[in-house]
Amino acid sequence: MCPVGKITMQNKFCQSCSHRHGCKEVYRELGNIKGPSVVYKVVIAFLMPIAVFIASLAVCETILAKTIEAGPVQTVLGFVFALVVTLGLILVTKLIGWQFGKDR
Image 1 (tube, rainbow, N blue to C red):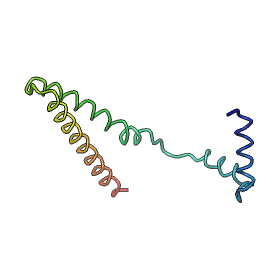
Image 2: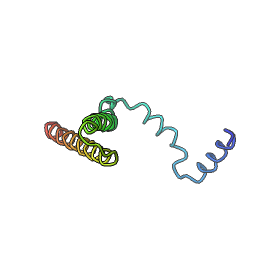
Image 3: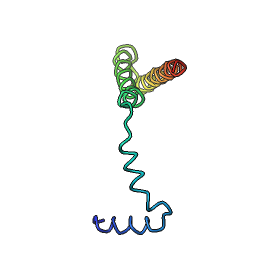
Image 4: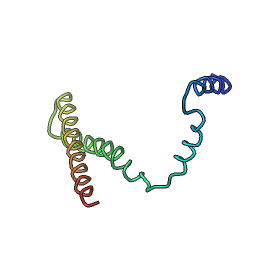
């Protein structure tokens, strides 16, 4: 869809909105809000569990490749181990977050 079509659809939507007069001001104020950076929390909440899952899966696959000959069993055990490690990390992270949340 061309930009002109999007603008036309947006204008039609805005005409039926009861907040159409103050809408731009609200978004302008929201954009000017200054607060602490959430990058650290985003990394902890989203990227760290994925990285831990991949790393633990790789480690477990390496260890199981030396001990178990059956491929499907090795894959399932590796996946389960990586899932347990990742869920443990999430639980520990939540417990630490709750502990620090009480101090505030």
